[in-house]
Length: 74
Image 1 (cartoon, one colour):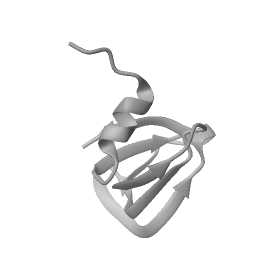
Image 2 (cartoon, helix red, strand yellow):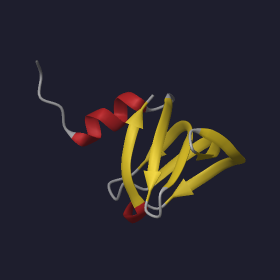
Image 3 (cartoon, one colour):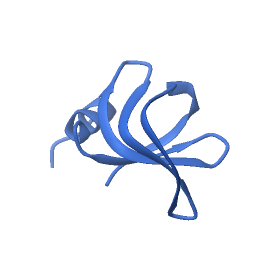
């Protein structure tokens, strides 16, 4: 199995649905549009989740990299 680097995983997740956990137990689900070396993420069609259910729709958001706990390709 080929070794994967974190940016390889993010590159493969571009234009796909992702689940992002932020500090403060906030979860955002949407389509990963872009990212940079600081792990700032642009997520389109984003929704804030609470207990796995949509709490509110956010649209296009920029998530600052230092608040990201994890990114899970969905």
